[in-house]
Amino acid sequence: MKSLSAGLLFLCGLLSHCRGDLYFLSVPPSIELSKNGEAIDVGDVSHMISYMMGFSTHKITSWTGVKALDIFNRPKANLFINLHVPSPSDISVTEFKAKFIIKGSGGAAPSLEETNAAIYHASSEKKPVIVDFEQEQNVFNILSYNTGVLNDLPVTFFDMKDRLAKADSFIASLDPASCLNVTQETDVLLLGEIQTMKDILSLLQIDKSSVDDQVPDSYYFTISGVDALVKTYGEQSCQVKEALRLLEKFIPEFTASFNKLYDNQLLAEVNIAGEVKREFLQVRRTRSLMATADVAEVLEGFVEEPVMAEYAIYINIAIWITVAIALAVLGSSYFIWFMDPGRDSIIYRMTTQRMKLD
Image 1: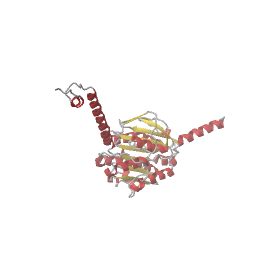
Image 2 (image 1 turned 90 degrees about the horizontal axis):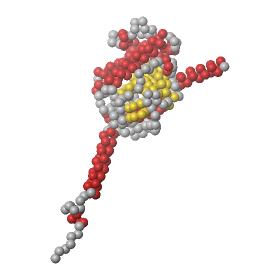
Image 3 (image 1 turned 180 degrees about the horizontal axis):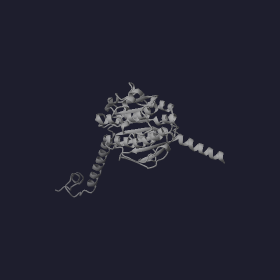
Image 4 (image 1 turned 135 degrees about the horizontal axis):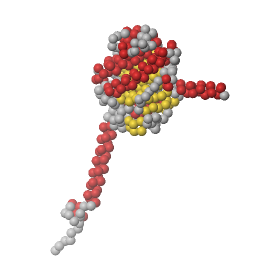
């Protein structure tokens, strides 16, 4: 009996680490989601977000969690936060619009390659903003397309320590008794991820020229610092608990600020995944759309032909011209059918034969 119970506990623990929780923190008024949607495969996340962003996808859009979608009023941007923690239950997400369970993730990072490719193909001439950020091997990778304001952000570990030491860093807002220490390498990795995300938001708020346009943008942020803290201090350590509390406060505030930046037209998700699987991150990294010289070549063949940015205008023109013609034909037919033939109309003159008088 004990062995059976132990086996069930092991199985439950294994399943909890093989799944992820996808929360929609911000949804524009044009989209309506079920509070608790269906479970989806990790590979379908990009399809689902592409669909909600108003683009065509490779997969049939039959998710029951999407109750309503206005294709004429699509979101201005998508914000995806991929958060790696020991277990999805370790962090609490209280305010969300909808929740989906990601099946078979195994710690895999969902890729937005289809969404990014669709945005690029549909709006490349208008230059959409596409940003991908993650920390790996003590390097803070900020890959971006069509925004030069992020070029001066720190990317090395030592540059990040200097950034955190400045007076305007968010470290000043931490509790003085916090377990996280900026002098410890592992702690700096997590604090640096949060600082980078804050700096990106601040730079976009200062220079809104790339945000205030008519093309959708895409942001992908990965937070893996908690996983490093677990490996260094242990899952029940003060540092890990402090980091989880910090992220529970930071993520909603960060999302709300991003939503305000895009005039409440932001689609935002946070994926609560398990421990970092580097092979998945490498796959996502090499196949993602970022600021490379061969960006068009990278994207080639990713998605079907997407709709154009002006698709709503063309559809409206086609629909209303068709309606106008139909009403004109119907109105003309009605008046002709019920016309009084006794009147001296052109139809009466052409169809009535008069008797010849001597």
